[in-house]
Image (cartoon, rainbow, N blue to C red; front, side, top):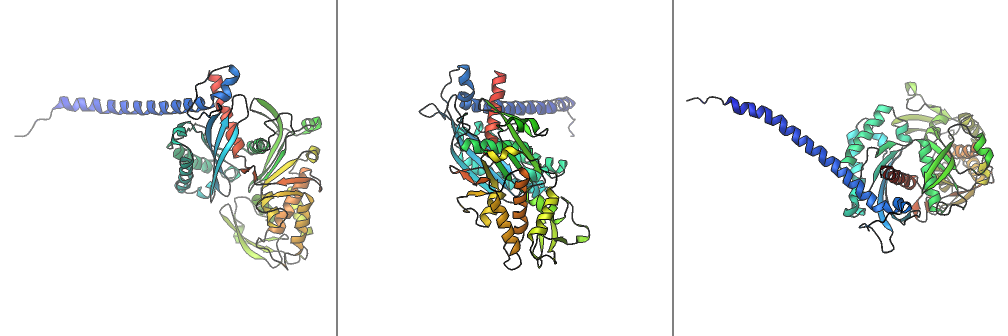
Length: 456
């Protein structure tokens, strides 16, 4: 005999099923909110000494408290550059009312940069996960939920179309959200060039001790990346503050002090972007018909290919050239014309120079490749003239060496540096990488403390 359907049960199922889904969704949202609040509270329990000491608060010792009352905490900064993605894992201690102390740094880099995955964002995930696994190995389990995790992308992503860049960042954010670390809504972003320069300035002045002693002289920072270049220093001369164009001066508040900095980032004047401009190419556009780019900065007999931002260019040297330096310098000057602001005060400020400044100087023996060193600005011009003069008779492994050295030499002159100005070139200070990453994590943690102060 056939069963008669029970309509009452069917009606109950129709009501119970969506109700169950709603309850599950509510529980999931509540869990996510609890996880974020718990992690944030855990972070501030560790850093309370830095922000609460001035309010006279007594804090309990966190699991990371040392015998002397220093608070131990960690920070993870991903540097997503144009040529690679790097992770910096910092261990720090913080004494109430003092500047933090860096006790350990772990660094790992992967190539290529995130921008290489612009047309297939899923392929970016394994590399990000590999770097996160390094952080898990370096940071004790009890600290995971209290450790800020941040990625900042630089010129490589700034040069991409907005929607494509955002798709990449959204994929990274999804991977971050699935990690056990402290992840905020602003955990992934494209860093504007000025912030990059300021963060690098914080790093070098922290490592040289200038931020610990407010009365001591600060140092300036020069950074030459692939897509952009930055200059940052603390002006002491009123004329610099008065005559600098809008957008070149910025106020920085960190470690309970305020600094008025001269800082600017020139997008498109990084070494790789400048190289393309000197060759006569246009950023992001292949040459029509695949024609060769002919340059006076390349050896007359040179023929080859160069890939930049996923585009391959065919190149050749200019046949009529004998000594490359003069025609190359004229071409570089055309590219730099009216693009760089010059300020007189740079002559009197001690400057550190990083990235491609270091690499090119080491390549031609101006500094030790491992230890770095000091040179004068005019050394770049001397090296450029020699390499350009001998490019045909003594070919280098890098066919762009004449062009790159000439560019650096003229860029520094455009900034206002005289030929006898001493620059310090280094990759590390006190065994710590001199990138902007340390300054950026300090700034991020300082902003978290500021949010806590406003909320309490």
